Amino acid sequence: MTTSWNYPDQATQDELKKIASAIVAPGKGILAADESVATMGKRLADIGVENTEENRRKYRQLLLTTDKSLADNISGVIFFHETVYQKADDGTPFPELLNKKGIIPGIKVDTGVVPLFGSNNECTTQGLDDLAKRCAQYKKDGCHFAKWRCVLKISPNTPSIQSLIENANVLARYASICQANRIVPIVEPEILPDGDHDILTCQKTTETVLSYVYKALADHNVFLEGTLLKPNMVTAGQACPNKATPEQVAEATVTAFQRRVPAAVPGVTFLSGGQSEEEATVNLNAINKFPGKKPWTLTFSYGRALQASVLRAWQGKDENVQAGQQELLKRAKANGEASMGKYVAGSVEGKAGDAGLFIKNHAY
Ligand code: 5MM
Image (cartoon, rainbow, N blue to C red; front, side, top):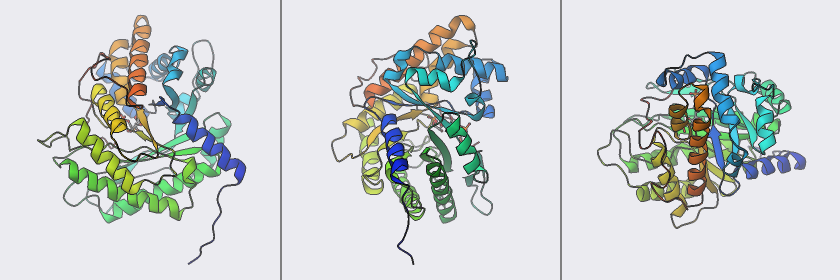
């Protein structure tokens, strides 16, 4: 066994740390707008809009041309490949729109979830083969952080050892390749909320998954200060008759992280995982109010819980662009407050309100 390894050089460490800490600056979080073409198709279908490249561009333009005050609460936006190379009506490249506001462009670099042969209907995530090349290009094109999502499932026999090892390793290899290219990796091991399990089962599973993930990151000599974690909150399963209170979610989530997330990690940026917009905000607020050791910033990297009201307000119509942008500003501000434990439940009303955003087996 060797005990010799190399950290990134000092300049790379400094750059990675700087990017990661800017993303988790106080009161700020991430807008996850990295829906792949198929996922965006589902979002657009919900509002009766056709899934064309131009409609996806128009929708992303709405998000990215929102008033510069968006930067008060949004530090980074995760793009899908196509979006990095799209332009606004006036010809401004989308990453440039963000730079002008002081928001950091990021990029989803996994190429999707695929079945894990031999497992119990579990999956892994692909995209490693040409990742170094793509990261080098994305860095040149202005993306300074990345995201890779793995999916784990709770059932009596899952997550299996096969899935725990495979998903942890693929996340670690991805993180290592990103750092080699001066890109901060967001490590996303999402445990799906599907099932009737109770909150304790989710807590134990989250602890197990995180222990595999951080062991693999250590094995790959990933520089933790230049990473972020994007986990699920610890909740009861969607079909569990006993829904946990925000305080119970907060206790279970922070306890799991205290046990399994090293203090060197600068921040945790939660996914919303099918919670309603209000629920995701209230739970984040409770997590931040929970008394106890919290050596990391605890904030948001929401997809559905930042965009559900925006889509409803927009409806694909040019005359509704401003209404959509107002919804984005409201939700960003609410989550910014929640990231500091200062959100008052019910104080921000959105078009999607309390509507659940759960999608069964959200693995794609
Ligand atoms: C925004 O949705 C992201 C892209 O999903 P696909 O690659 O499956 O199209 C997704 O990875 C998202 O960033 C996370 O799941 C968090 O989003 P939610 O909606 O759970 O906050």
